[in-house]
Image 1 (cartoon, rainbow, N blue to C red):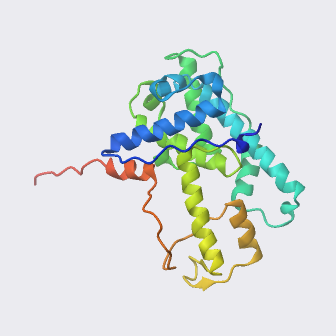
Image 2: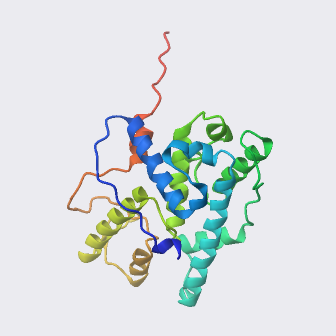
Image 3: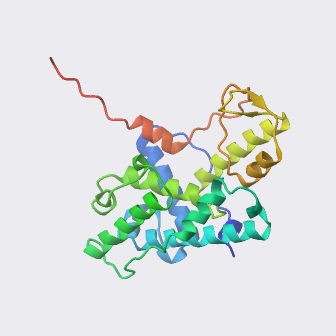
Length: 253
């Protein structure tokens, strides 16, 4: 069974009283996602960091994303999508497949040099292959020494978002984000309008835009276009990121 055919069971919504609770909810979501994709890890929210600290599972997932990108490109080629200009997720998938697999020591033990090397290889892959921006990456000590659990979680969520564009199973949080984007895009398409950030005017959909929306490769700019708000959901990692901004230091003159 392919990853794209597996659905994670939605948990009921519950209020969160602090950024720590949001962070725990994201870790819980990631643990369930990784357990579904890699049952042999036996990963749970309580042993989340311990199961990842050798870097083996991270590198294994990186190579799984690369393989999924290859499958994504092959499907597009079969549909003869390659005859048009290659942009969006298709271009990313092509570039990703050209990059060699992530090398790692599959027998690495926690706290060893080999574990640190595995984690470093995964971080470099995120930076060079997925082009994840620096503020969403983590350092080896953030995972191995538990210096910054938040950065590890935010990075893994971003990796999950990239993989979802190629048809991989996504955590429930990412599925919710994509569902909201699809609903907004569908409303805009129904009205025959899309916001153009270059001209700041409303223009008609063309054939390419329809195709991109179907593949969920287009990042829409929700500018002055009126829209009906049906809920007040926010991205959990944004909440954590902004609520955890360090206070500015005040120096006495």
